[in-house]
View 1 (spheres, rainbow, N blue to C red):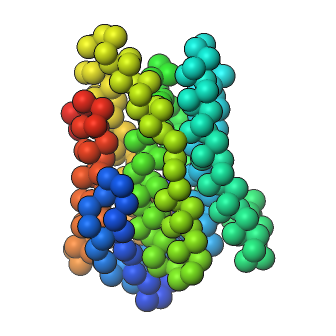
View 2: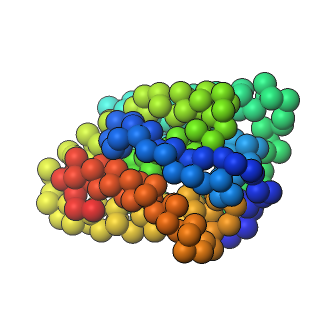
View 3: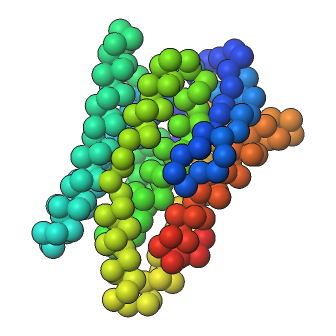
Length: 237
């Protein structure tokens, strides 16, 4: 599924996980031969934000409560703005955004289908968890690309307006404790699929022991941030 993610190998790049909201202290990890080339990075990042917007838009259409529609619309709008700003950056570089995103469409659409819940609340949690983890991962990757990467980092660090989703889920859990168990289980299921997307963004996903040692701190931080998101909702990660 994820063969589309892997392109030519860049030289001498580094991956830095910066302090951001629910992430820990910034740290630097040498990813030299593992970070994707810039076009791959931009194409993936742009299409991911478009996918988050699309999922949230579907939730708006299927949600009956007006207040919840409005809350979801803010999160959808934030994802769309991030997509549009990355697309504008791609165009500034003289590239075609569609062509950069197209190789990843099939794999990322499959990821969205696999993380789409049977119930709207599960899908809301999917967006909150997967977007949070992947925003963190692409923010970490952004330090590999000089000024372009710094611009992408600023885009990704903008307010995502997903607190409204947390509030909706909190009210859902408060209405019936069975939701706590159900959503905790669903949240744990999301982790594997999301980490596969992150790993597939690297130049190759089958890593030797030395490469695993390089990526392990970053994925440990991603899991730590995920646990904090779950804890903030009263869910066990």
